Image: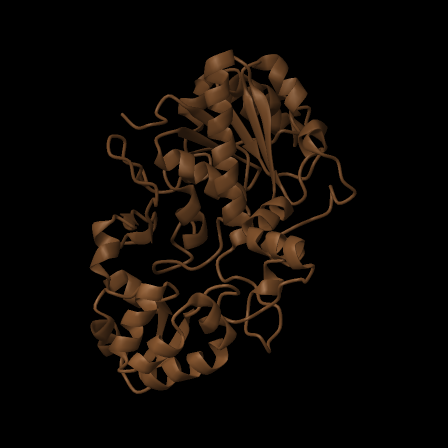
Amino acid sequence: MSALADLRVLDLTQVLAGPYCTMLLADMGADVVKVERPGGDLIRANPPYVDDAESEAYGGYFQSVNRGKRSLELDLRTDADREAFLSLVERADVVVENFKAGTMEKFGCGYETLKEHNPQLIYSSIRGFGDPRTGETDRQGQPSFDLIAQALGGVMEITGQEDGPPTKVGPGVGDIFTAALNAVGILAAIHHRERTDEGQYVDTAMYDCMVSLAERAVYQYSCDGESPTRQGNSHPTLFPYDAFEASDGYVVIAAFSDGHWATLCEAVDRPDLAADYPDAASRLANRDSLRAEIADWTRDHESVEILERLDGRVPAAPVQNTADIFADPHVHDRGMLADVSQPGADEPMTIAGSPIKMSETMPQPRGRAPLLDEHREELLGEETVDSGREVAESDD
């Protein structure tokens, strides 16, 4: 029995933020029904593919964040499909959508309407700037993507090299962090419903979530009135906490405690540095010269030698690429690489596993992503299928 095995989620989202949120729920056992627009999720066709784009049903982007879901293609602009959707709402626990504010109302499926059909419904939205129901602003209705959210939320301003331009964080944190927080909100709303029988609206905005992600910049500005900016891989208040070039790549070293600093100085045969800079304040005040001292040592050694010298006594690690991650036994032992079948390909596709680990109800990807409209009959039944097709044909 999975932790969320009794949960039915209607997922009207597409691309990344919404699908990642419902993917987390699906990995924990929820029955996630992906209600797709005519033609399906916009990123179904996005590469890469295992072998051949012509023969495979979808690319890696769609596979990764839609694994373990069921698919139903509906056009909410038509009466028949709208009625089919409302019938599903009556038996659902959660509805998740990431349209612009007001779009579901245009379909006649806004929160207030769905609440009439299911008073205990948890209705969740993911938008760039939130929903007026939880706080109205002049930005609502504007389009937003991960890049926009990272720029507005201050993440780009504090990411990158000191002498370089504002830099986007590699993974789409504007989408993924928002998605994770939305899943937390949904589960909190379910807990509230269990105590009160009361459904509610859950809303996470990408801009809001990036402000939350950059929380350190907020309190720094509050304390000293200066806007934090880029400083490479270093930390504003901890040293050493940085990346250092080795002879064959890069390593990171986090030796900011007095004990770790002393051990690092011993490992690099520089006990004088430990004696001259025994506390955090003295190290921060001389961080530039001390960084140069450590860097001079790391450049003359291979990554493996540096790590052996530190021998687990100082927090340190190599900077790995994805090939390194695939070769790391830890990643396999933790179930963080999962193979799922790829329709149209002879070989499976490897996707990231679930990072949430539980002793009794272990989350995991529950099979491949669905084909478009693959589960229509089991979700709606033959009668609904036939009536929906008749309406569609008459509309043509």
